[in-house]
Image (cartoon, rainbow, N blue to C red; front, top):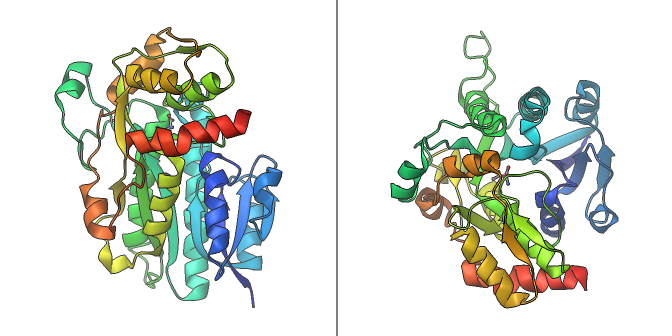
Length: 338
Ligand code: AKB
C-alpha cells in the first residue's frame, strides 16, 4: 500500500513557507515537499518528507508515483515575471514543461487510484495584458475572462497552464478508445501581488510592495521602481493561504469555473509609501522608475473582480488594506528584523 500524501512543489518558496504549517494541521494527510532549493529548517518540521529535486526530472517524478498515493498536488514551483524575462526559454521549461510533467503525474495517479486527483494551481494577474495605461485607468474590476493578452513570458506561461489544466480535466486523450474517466480536478487561483512578512520577494514585478516594507524595517533606503501613481491589486500571504485551503477543500460540484480571481486591496505605490512611513517614520523611500518594469505593471489591472470566488466557495479576505498592514505586515516585519 502506498502512503497517501499531498505533494507541494516549490515548497521552499514564499507561498510554501506560509502554506505548509496550515497543511500540517490537517492531520488526515502527510505532506511531501519538493523544491530545487534546499529546505529551510523553519518549515522542514511540517513535512513528512522533503525531496530536493527538479520538476523537470521525469525519473524523480516517476519514483514519486511508485512510492506514494498522491491525493492532491499544490503546484507552487515557478519562475516569477521579472526573473523570467532574463531567460524566457528557461522560464518556459520550468513554468510550462514542469507543469505538464505534474499534470501527467496527476493523471497517472488518478488512473491507479480510480479517482480524480486535485491539482491546485496558483496563476497570476500577469495573465492579463491591458493594452494601454489610459485603458487601465478607465477600467473597473476585471473579471477572469477579460483582457487576457499577457505581455510577459511568465504571464503567457500562467495563462497557457490554465488552459492545460482545463484540457487535462475535461479533454485529456479525448480520441482514445479507453479515455480514462479519472483525470484531474484542476483548480486555479489568479493571485494579485502577494506580500509576506516572513519571506522576501524572489523576482516578481510586484516585489516593490513587499520590498518597500522589508527595506524600511531594516532601515535600508529603498528606491521604488514604479511611479507613485502606479496601482495594482495586492493580498497578504495569510489570505493567499486561506484561498488555497478553501479552494482545495470545496466540493467540485460547488465550482462553476476552473480559475478564480482572488484579491484583497488595490493601492498606489504612493499609498504604500505613506503607510510604510507611518510605521517607519525614518524610512528613506524614493522613486527611481524602471520604465521596462513599469510597463509590465501598467498592463496589469488596477483591480480584479473576485465575485465568482465569493459566490462559489465563500471566499473573502481576512485582511483589508488597513488590517493587512496593521495586523500582519508591520508587526511581522518588525518581528523578523528586530
Ligand atoms: C510577479 O510579480 O511576478 C508575481 C505575480 C504578480 O504573479 N508576484
